[in-house]
Image (cartoon, rainbow, N blue to C red):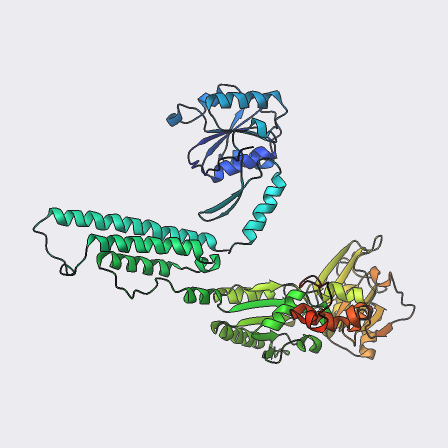
Length: 576
């Protein structure tokens, strides 16, 4: 089969006939509106319209002909410029119906482009799956062999492109257009001066400029533009700014009027553009519940490659031990009454490093967006011109119960989980949630005001918690000194008061606390954590997860240790 001729059609003010009322008809109408065409929908008044179609009809962006298709529609609903012949026809009901075959035959006879859903043999054109970024459009077609595969290929291609490539295409197009305009303006001015014998002499009149000089300048600039488009990396092209465009045009205008010198400098310095792409970077990353083996490989790579690390006070020492000796660490100096000042200090230090072109890692406990002020910090750096990369972390609100042998949900016991803070803004108590027997509630940052929190639950105004509700205090989850206190709301305050506090910790409330392990006494204390010990024995070579982690972050280490081993563990294949 010969390949199709791929074209880009200017559809502004075109009339597109869409036949059908299903979701595909809605998609075709949306695409027509997007490209500037006017869609006309043909469907019976009794048809069950897709909600997208109904909405656009209400907005008057679609004209609805409430009837069946008529052969005369093809030659009566179009524009005046085309003698009322429509510009394109979309049949969305599929190719098995006789109506679709009939419409396709009519359109071919009238040379009207027609597309019939799921019937390539009835189509004279197909719709490409497209990626659009400003003036840049990339279309993918499998020639009717698989629309899902088209979408997959389009996503793969789009993900490999710089995010701001469309802006670069727009700027380079501006350069090309304005160079062309200046060329024609110079030619027109030269012809005018030649016709006017008494015209005054310009300041550069005595400089020897031959026609070949002007042509050489013109050819040199266009050749330069063609070469950077052809050979420069796309990321470098995406770094071109509006100021660069103005500088190019000013230089071109000068060289068009004056003979070029032999030592002309490049219009754009690749080193300068690459330096823009290598400007300071800010990364917000979660360090997980505490154990270093629960870090993601992405966060581990960020720890090993950052120029400066700004860490939360609660990030455990075993995680901080992974930081290379050369990398400075600033621990947040947060204590009661100084939280805002400590946050401002981290912001200041981060900005200073970013202005120096450094990579800054803001290392947070748990997950950055779960009571971690991650969104606030992202907004702060965004207002100063830096878009943060956010890396997730395993949140203790789900992992801590797991390590304490408490399932967050359990069939027949709990079918929902609620994550709350035990401390509101500026230390104010939050509104307690209502009691639901089938709900698990996890309270973070609650142990320092546990007594007040428990009282608000058992004395809730509308749906109070029974004092016998099982609960558990989990402290320093996943760390070697993890501690779990199993109790009920009636006795948990007394338990923590007698056993003492070991922050950071959280409170789990709900019947799931007794699914796997019941507490026959008023409270039971469990010390220590061995939840990952079995992985140490399973790790290759008997060196545990520490050795595996070193392999993931140090390319080529395995070859040095064992050069005769055929199989390798690919970087990123294991989540720590």
